Image 1 (cartoon, rainbow, N blue to C red):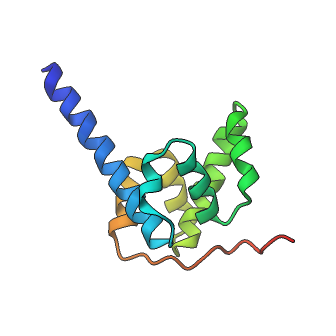
Image 2: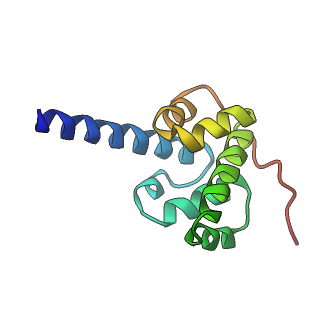
Amino acid sequence: MKNLIILLELAIVVLILAGVWKTFTKAGQPGWAAIIPIFNLYILIKVAGRPGWWLLLFIIPVVNLIIGIIVAIDVAKAFGKGTGFGVGLALLGFIFYPILGFGDATYQGSSIPAQA
């Protein structure tokens, strides 16, 4: 039974990594970045169209939850999806990242205006 649980957990991790890898590739970023801790957050922030210094906001407790949801919504919008899909990315990433990565959504770029 213990081996079955470990195998199921491993399958979920691989599914999430594959979904994020494919999402990064669709956005023109290196897919391998999905497996590098912290760097994958930086790339996700870039895909969302937010400035790189937002990575520091993920260090602050409670603030990181809010920033995580904002980034997920921005990623969804960058792929032409709605706010509900972004909340799904934030709360149920193991389901929504594979849908985003392997689905027919295309990266449209960030809707956030560039900052000077």
